[in-house]
Amino acid sequence: MQFDLPPELGELQATVRKLAQEKVAPRAREIDTTGEYPQDLFELFRDTGLLGLVVPERYGGSGGGILGLTIAIEEVAKYSNTAALMLLLTRLPTGPVLIAGSEEQKDHYVRGVATGAMRAAFGLSEPQAGSDVVGMRTKAVRDGDDWVLTGTKCWMSGVVQADWYCVFAKTGPAESRAHDDITCFIVERNWPGVSVGRTDDKMGVRGVDTGELVLDGVRVPASNVVGDVGGFRLAMLGLNSMRPIVAARGIGLAEGALMYAVDYVKERAAFGRTIADMQGIQWKIAELATEIEAARLLTYRAAAMADEGKFTREYVPFLSMAKYYATEVAVKVSGEALQMLGAAGYMKDHMTELYYRDARQLTIVEGTSQIQLGLIARGVLDRDLWWD
Image (tube, rainbow, N blue to C red):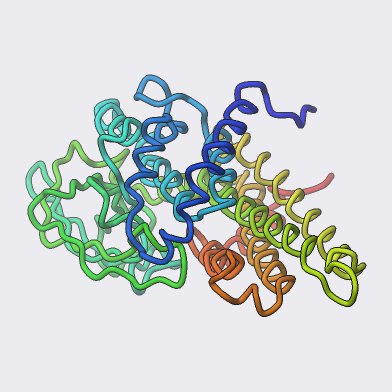
């Protein structure tokens, strides 16, 4: 059993760490304050090959896999979860296409994302169908060789910037809850009937717009159906394989918040000594550092499993554990880091309040903590996760 990263991933980690320290960290506060899309960071990620990190070489990427992307996102998220989300969006919408798409779809749409020629977003959630995916109402009706899509998707990260969307819609009766009545489509931004509705005023992770995608009788050719008609399982496979990538945003944020707080308490004098000299603070630092490392082990294991194709139902408990634990640790560590700074930590003079706001997104997106707990419990009850 080997816990050290292989040389190529170690080099990737060092490269992205330096890039994040020099280019991402100085931009983090400005991105949050203005809420403007950081085009300069997109171009940086494009020019350094990070947009294609998770994509196989034959489709224009570098073949670093999910573990490679996980490592890169961890480094970037130490300073900006917005920048980390930009990297995440190279895999979330391309995931179903990579898993079940045609060669033509991969060569055009996935390659476009890998090279930076295109940006993409993922459309699954609706106002009444977040965690309850099969409750979606977006409808796809067959019309000759095409499908006509009508409905609204919400909470889509990158919706404004995307050139194409990976969209799930009902191909059966609107009231149906059958998994075979949901199908995946690739929808291009410039097609008639496609528009962006309202954008959300978010608490954190500002800079990458989140909002509604409106589909008004959008004609989609059959060649843009991803996999088979009746592809609900594809949505789940795509999300399962994303668990360690979302978890990486959590462990990176937790690391960044704790490092920031530790630097502060080592300098802040109180009661004739520094705050770091106090045993209560030392024990809290030790507790948080241990939980970060535990989250990292869960996350790296999950990423390695996903790269081996182990993201079907029997592996879900292990993948969900990584997402659940790492994102909850991010919330805990960011809160404790803010507390270590006291009143100063609540002010925008310090990054702790930004870490705190950004962390709250992570336990909600791509399967809430409660959904992850349910999946883990089901895995134990079904003995997919068992110890004898």
